[in-house]
Length: 417
Image (cartoon, rainbow, N blue to C red):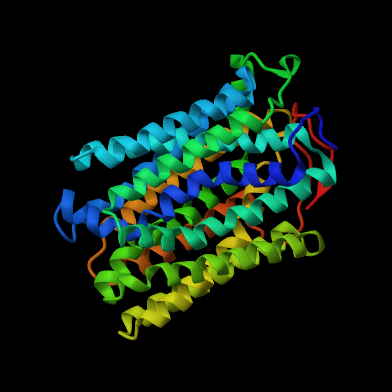
């Protein structure tokens, strides 16, 4: 049952929250077909710095997560979401007008900072629903949200057939403006004044201690960061790999959708199996499988047998492993958080998103017109993920965890995952 009285219907609420969350993804995935054109106009053809159009945005998203969640706890959900969407639309429109690559990166950073306001949507859902109702809303929202990575590259490619690359940024501005108007008219304020926090130093210090000082929390947070970094290296280099390495840039939207679909199917399978098999068994198995996939892919590349179809198959398998890992890793990172869950989640989001952006950019910078740097980087990320998980689990894998929250935190005294 909703925790507050609202006039918005259930179906409209699910659709609106999914769209608000999707503003993050669409500004990444719809950009991919435009990267070669941006590089040709603002840089020189083949300049790897064009990948920073993606990395700067993701870095901004990571930084923004430190801000918006805390502000929404203090001032309420609605003003934070509406303010963020407004800045997002202005920044996207400014990106369409710039003539300098350096200015474009600054504006993309601001665009990402504003897009991070969508993390507040999760708080809105938590405010309004609980128990099975909340799980239902989150599941339905996630299904709608996962459609964006599948359709966005095709949408970006379609825009490029009738407009220059700047038209894609105009689309972002229009999309965010429509979402802002819809939220302004229909989204209620879900955090009553009596539940708002003063953001004391003690509260923030406690959250920092959990997020960065607890072995399980920090280990799984870093595991998410390196895994996401491998995914971002794929996202940022995909236009060059499809266009330069294989000479089939036009195939990018379809092949990208195929890989994203593999991740979606894996995520759905995880939601159906996790209660039966456990988070650790599923995620640890997927992590070990990702190492096998990355190793096999690197062997194929070194042996000189890499083809477009082998790249897509291996990447789809890798994305499937990621879909089985990431939500479970994120949940386990939050296990020790207890009473400081909100601020701890913001800190974890900052570490994972910003760290992934830097890792993805570092791997992408080494692109040499082959898939060797990417596959080698993906294997390094998979091995680093294993080390972080082993550290988090005290050098054990695939075993159920029995334990409680750290001393002083509000959580169940014992639980089994």
